[in-house]
Amino acid sequence: MSEFEPKIIAFVCNWCTYAGADLTGTSRMKYAHNVRVIRTPCTGRIDYMLILKAFSAGADGVIVSGCHPGDCHYTSGNYHARRRWMVFRSLLDFLGIDVERVRFAWVSAAEGAKWAEVVNTTVADIRRLGPYTEYQNLIGRGVERSFQV
Amino acid sequence: MAETVRRTSGQTVVNDMEALRQRARELLDAGTVQVIIGYANGSNRRVRPFFARRPEDLERLILDDRCVLNLAVYLRKPEVKALGKAAVIATPPLLRSILQLAAENHYQESEAVFLALDSAGNVLELSSAEQIAGVLGSLPGSTGQDACVPSADRMPALSAGSTDRQARFAFWKQEFERCIRCYACRAACPMCYCEQCLVDSNQPQWIPVAAHSIGNLEWHISRAMHLAGRCVNCGACSEACPAGIPLNLVNQFLADRIQQEFGQKAGTSAKLDYALSVFSGSDRETFIK
Image (cartoon, rainbow over all chains, first blue to last red; front, side):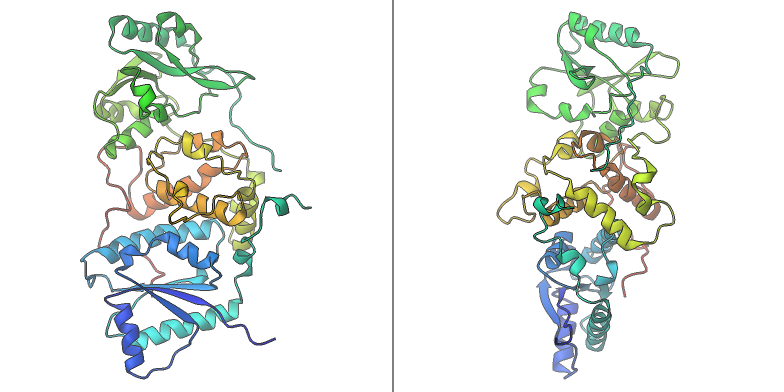
């Protein structure tokens, strides 16, 4: 069996991290190809449901990234997002969902090298953790199965 | 299936029911209110909400520790509004809900009258958020744990100091698997007042509607997130749950977190910003790299 290749979904903001990821490419920096980047207008737009949907669609890890505090194109979207993540992340942890698989980062449009590093470390960590079968097993695990002993 | 744990023993805790009935009768007779919303005995030793519109109905009102259902849910229903102005038999959890509803502009001053008993057995007649906030701390039963507390042996995974993530996951998976998606938790909650709930939306369908593990988990996460910073810990959700899922633990966990992180607590004031719609430049976390 071939080596496990983690499937990572990255939700990034249009103004900083997406441009930063672009810079990584135009600077000819190579980074792990396991990441699927989804561009959103702002980190304030990244609803917690998007993260849950990524996992239920089979992702092994999620990266959420946007502008540094103070740099938001819409002034405060990332501050709102930060509060929401603080609450959401602690809720996931309370429910026993592996918060190691949800990574948050601030990557500006000038930090192409940092984006490569964020992706590379996430991919290396998720590779070590293995596929998120614990969560993926929930999909299709219905009532009928819960009655089996 | 784990045994459903109810905190209720059915003991009568209110000896001053007659005083409450008397005041309710006065309000009905004077035409100040047209309906008294309270509790009455239902079938099978259960308590049901009771809407008294005639003075003779008032004899059926009861108030004991089985009365956990949060009557604030009825104040927003059009069919209840159509009955006229209401007086509500109030417990501290209900008054906290009213404060939070007022903070969200969903309770207007003097929309209803709340009849509560103070520790001396006097009937208090409250209608404004200021009055409620003023007396709430002194009412009997307003301190300590109000919500139903499931027994600790059911939740070793959640006991203090537990760092075993997989045990927590296994615990909640087992709990949520019993969910039949009846949405009784939503119906029982005075804070769940959206006219269209995200779970009823099918374009896009965010949460699968079948009572299967993934949808159940997503529903309960969504419910907790939507109540984060708004839940007043009345415990009506876990009391209403036919599967006996300790739902209020999730809400209470987030309420505690929000109090620790952002220093605010729902149900304490009618002048409270929604914790997730405001922010501070000094919010501190350690997980964003």
